[in-house]
Image (cartoon, rainbow, N blue to C red):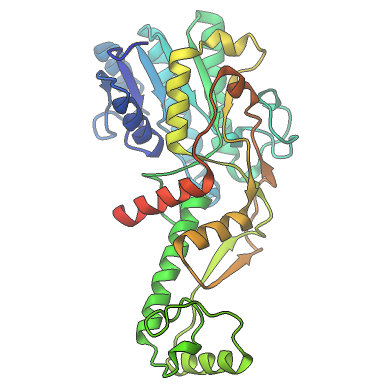
Amino acid sequence: MNKSSKLYIAGHTGMVGSALMRKFRAEGFTNIVTRKFEELDLRNQQAVTQFFQTEKPEFVIIAAAKVGGILANNTYRAEFLYDNLMIQSNIIHASSSSGVEKLIFLGSSCIYPRDCPQPIKEEYLLTGHLEQTNEPYAIAKIAGIKLCENYYRQYGCNFYSVMPTNLYGPNDNFDLETSHVLPALIRKFHEAKSQLKIINEKLEISNQSSLPSGLSSKANGTKKEGLTKERNQSIKQSINKANVSLPTVTVWGSGTPRREFLYVDDLADALLFLLSEVEARDIYEQGITHLNIGTGVDLTIKELAEMIKEIVGFKGEIVYDTSKPDGTSRKLLDVSRINRLGWRSKIDLEEGIKKTYEWFLKHQ
């Protein structure tokens, strides 16, 4: 692959696709082909076939997909299955028919069994039951993996799949009904912080120094801890008199599940490395169907919430709603294979969340 090679990035406007555009353009690639949804519905086989016959891309990355968090996956089950099956099947088949030199398909770590050993190795695929809340999405992604594998085995196509862990970063989805946990928490903490600011401006409490940190910053800039019971009672009386309640942030589940997160620009860096250095035979000759991509480090949802709370600057309370599902208890990918091939993640979680929150403040 060289910098004038014709590359088609499917899903270029999404979080992953936009990170790929940034990365490849920054590296000097000059022949990138894209289409918006209004120009090309990837669920339409005829339209996709015509596009490939006309454009004839040499390299393809499939970053297009219908995605979402637990609520979206569990609510729009048929759409998640149908849309993803159609998108990936049309692109993979058209890539084969038009002679694409190399294709990389992006899956998701939810393809793995709900209760498989940790960290998750590539060979654990199809060794147990899937998580019920996102089973349709997982089945669609598994089908995409098997399409790539068998187009390689039957036709010799240089197609293979990668399994990123949970992704986040610029252009993420911050909609509270359809987003994943990390962007949802960023928005929740930001909105709760904004509500605290409004309360602070409206409350008329004479002794400003008695307010808890986060409710007062004008009269006394220093943060005060260990307030006495008398001061707390005075604050509560003032708040009740003003007919307001302090905002809290509600987190789904118990907070105990562990998750791994990868900054999306790290994924873009990995895909450039793979397109340049790794062939399909390098994957399939190891007896596996795909490569994991992640950091190899996880944390609890509670630890994640506390980290985001600190970065956003929210001083209120976190509430855990245990009536909501936790999902899989742990999903940590074994990334030893891609590490041995020569790639490692570079952006740690705290740095990545800070970058993501900066982007959120500028664009939301």
